[in-house]
Image (cartoon, rainbow, N blue to C red; front, side):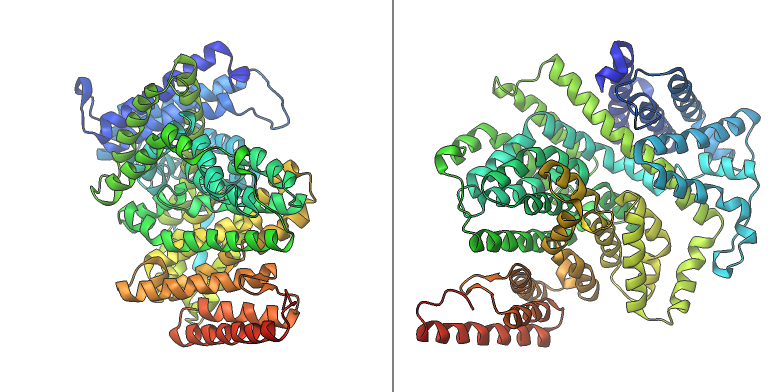
Length: 634
């Protein structure tokens, strides 16, 4: 990054990121430093002015370009992205009180058109062509909304200038729910993630996983699963998680006997789970809290059981693969000591516990990550190895700034989608018409939502997919009586599935490159390892007890049977069942899978039928083993 920026632009980037952090602390802690206390809309403009310009400094105009210095056109876009949001921030009260979205003076009108173009170019650089085309289409949708031939997509039309001013200066588009979430909640957690990783937290959690699981059979793969789960919570990106942790875990798995494609698939599957794993989930979960107007803590609690089931399912399959192939763990002499690791990194565990306490007990969501980040930075001075110096501080600021610039640019652009659907009125009519078209069939809408999430997830970020479907699809599910949290989580889960599902499978393909394996084979293996993720959304949307939204007894019973279902389903997928060994009989393997699905299915009758089937299988295997003592597989 610094090679492209050079010394001057590195200093500018550092100033912008530090300014944004100071502004956010001043706003969220109500400090009013030097009498500076902007209204919330002005605060969002200042954040945009801090992060959007970085998109043109950090990301080159063409991906094919190697390390290229900042060009004149980058500087031009940088100036527009910096100056006009600052102008709007200074005039924030006029924008809101004088209704500039419908009656703006000439300067902000021209500036709105320029900023509209600049945001689209920024998201093209940051997130790619697919997302910018989707955002472009919806951003111009209000211009021709009244002429759409499909009745339920028709809406109120606006002229070009009114569309531009609405996008930039109304509460619907770039100042809508996505950016409001960024300014009020997400920015603090992004700062915390950057601080935790750059102070050594990522390395600590990986070493901790090694010390706990490395000596078990298939230990290197289990370390990959657990380590990627921890790191995925911090990065929020499946692909970056694969690239970061995969460079360590995939070679280790290959060395211990795992085949190339399997090692890549394990890393890819585990990495996609990070965005759905509390306490720090992907940005979509924070936006979901804003859409539903509920505390983020409720979202994190709801996601806990499904996330645990997903990773347990992966671990069962990894363990079965290792057992079938006699893959032993790493000798303890080659692993880090648990107690040594714990003593060196207890501060990271304490910081995570402190964050959970502040979120769930103190209900201090917006300020919590700032307190914990400060605690971690001060804590680095306890050990010489982790002590913060100027170079480490610079890297921390740049890494955090890059992540926040990426998220801010994407959320501002995705705001065009929300704004266009809102100001035209299509968002309010679409869900009603969707229910009518589906004939009131909940299953049809769920299938349509899954397919749409999957397709959009091939080329868009999880946050972008979620925001789009939260506006048009989730209200239809809620209208049919589904739990609102379950309906919104359903969309997020299906948006992440595309990362491990061919033909796109971005996480699997990234892992296959590191593993030197066939991408398609790696993708299909990742699908098998992540099989639980394909069933979970359908089950928890029909039974909210799976996401903790029921009476305590019902939650416990449902979770126990779901755990049994995941165990048996995963065993069927891998062909190995603990207590029985290899499932060489195909018919028996299918029956175990069916029993798993029945136990997993959210209904007490099917739960007990699945349990009865497995009791019979274990009893039959026990009798068979007694009569054939040398048999090791069934």
